[in-house]
Image 1: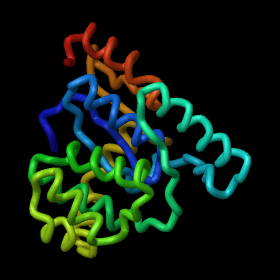
Image 2: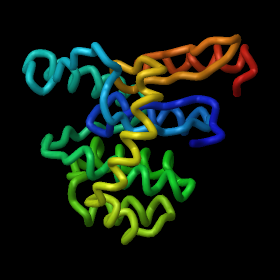
Image 3: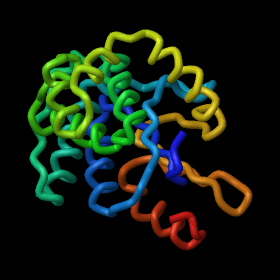
Amino acid sequence: MSDAPIRFYFSLRSPYVWLATEEIVRAGISVEPIPVVGFAAGTVFSDPVANPPRLAYVIEDVARIAARHDLALMPPVDTQDWAAVHNAVEFAKQQGRGMAFTQIAARLRWTQSLDLADPEVIAGAAEAAGIDPDGAVAAMGDTSVRARMIEAYTPRIEADQVFGVPFFAFDADGRTHRYWGQDRIAMMLEDARAMGVV
């Protein structure tokens, strides 16, 4: 659990998450990064990789958005072990460097086409984030880390009704305010500031 009032649900699989991490850091806001270990009950996952026209559009769209922010997209080969890399994120989070590690890992995947299932890539990301590389690599294969994440995050995913990534939520005015997509960050921040959340 973090003191950050804004919950940031993500999977490093998504290029929109990469764009979101860049925007969050640019905005200088504190968020709690929460790797998605599953979606809310009833969610039907539509995998863009299984839909070639949609995948082509996503790559075109992300490249267009990235260019507007002077970022270069290099689409990766999609052979990731998401549980392993998200375990490393959780290790970084426990060291107080979750968002830093998440941004670095997203950049490595989406700007350098590196495989986040590669322990050497994770060790480099950990070093850059200022955490123990050996600990991050060890967490990748630690099934107890994944089990703890599922136990801790599944109720939160259900409560916030997370159905896609990037997804943001915060509590104010007696209810949960939810925002889906990196293109909602400015609106989310405006609302959070108006409600005194950040």
